[in-house]
Length: 244
Image (cartoon, rainbow, N blue to C red; front, side, top):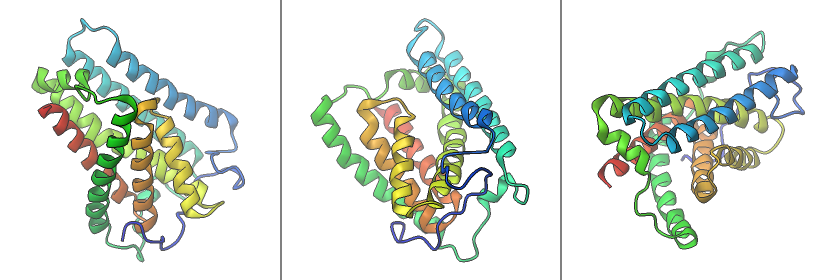
């Protein structure tokens, strides 16, 4: 089961003092640069989505794609710089011979995620009111042209899931789990994951998503499971937005 106790706590494959669970490396420049890059890219995406309303939506979608590609490359660079000498960056995708069926876990995790997000959305709607349109700007990008639609699908269903799961589960959760109970590590990493999106009204839903993704990773020992759930959820969100 996806929420069962993990086979073993995810082991971090990055350098740095073990007591500093969020440290990517002993190099302070790398630590600062990594999180500054994540924060800056989030602000830049918000800028692209909320300003320049006269800009063609296809251009905005392509700009978002370029930003995400650059962010992914920067993240890979920082993680590669922080990797332990006896490990490779791709080792975070390495299959554990004792792992559970990650495809089954992904299917169960996705089902549980949709249910919990639906329930939390009821709470959020009660606090903030029901939104008429989930994301008007994103919807405009999806219906504008095939180019903007393809760019959005690439960003939300491929690049973003890989990028965020490498950072928040493959690195952060694994680092936290090496210094504390895996359940505590899941909660803390989920809170950071939610806060990093800079969306107060969506904090609860993002926190729930982070917890499910974290449990999936811990329960299977395979990062592919959380990536698949993340991708499926984003695809589901795009479909709902497109049809709304």
